[in-house]
Every structure is written in structure tokens, then in C-alpha cells.
Length: 187
Image (cartoon, rainbow, N blue to C red; front, top):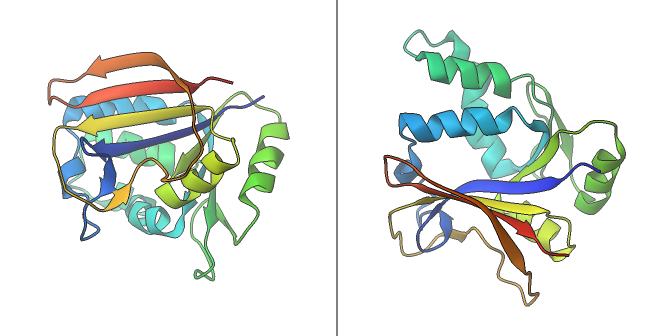
């Protein structure tokens, strides 16, 4: 069965965006960007909410930008054909290789898990991840921890009353002092 992963950049104090919604502190160094390129190769479908979808829309036409480097072009070449499922109650349409849903996250994950394939089902966005976590649907939590305290914003981990035991699977420290942590849910 295909695994569900929740992988995002996070501040040391546990937030994916700052209090103003900014993510400028997550600009990846080349070694971290290379990690994201390598990680997306293992993904068969990416589930995301409206905010992340709107942030990632940049990549739909990024390959037209002559100022992009080789790594950015490689990312765009992998990201654009990747199937995406966007959950939103406010969007009326999506672009690129995306389809729009307004509800039924658990049902969609179970449907995707039943499809043939070995690639991961990636979830991006704290709101969707919180819903998937509450339903016990996340298999791995992956954090790219940046050495910054931002003091508030949207938390990476859902604030619920359910305990989730985790097993550390992998750690990496990058030259930029960013630390990757990969945890598997203990069932």
C-alpha cells in the first residue's frame, strides 16, 4: 500500500509560515533544494490545500524564465507533470496537472492508496495534514528544520489531543545548518 507523507519546511519553534504568512526564511540553499528535487522523484501524487497550491503556481510557468538555474528547471520539470489534488472550498478552478476537490480527504487518500503504484502520496499544508493526522492517515512526518525562531504563524504539527508515537528513521544536517528529520508513525 502506498504511504502518505507530510513533508514541509519548519522553523525551530514549529511553524511553516510566520505570523504574517511569510516564508522568506525557508529559501533553500543549493544542497537543501537538491534534497527537495530528489524527494519529489518518489512522489506519485501531491495533495495540497489552496494556500500551498497558490504558492506553487509559480512553477507552472517557471520554465519560461530565462534567469532560472539548472536546479530550478529540473524541479519545474518534475513538479509540473506530477498529478496534484487541490482541496479548496473557495477556488473554482485549478491549472496544470491538478484537479479540484472540496471535501472527503480521507476518502481521497484511501482511493489513491488503492491505485496501483509504489510512489508516495505527499500532503502539503498544515490544515490538510491536521485532518489526515486526526484520521490516522499519515505514515511519515518529514521536517526540514530551519535554524530560526519566528514566534508564531501556522504550526507544522496539528494541535489536537491525539498522541502519535514516532520512530526516527533518518537525520541529515546540511551545510546551511538546516536539519532534515524523518519520522515514521509507530502503529
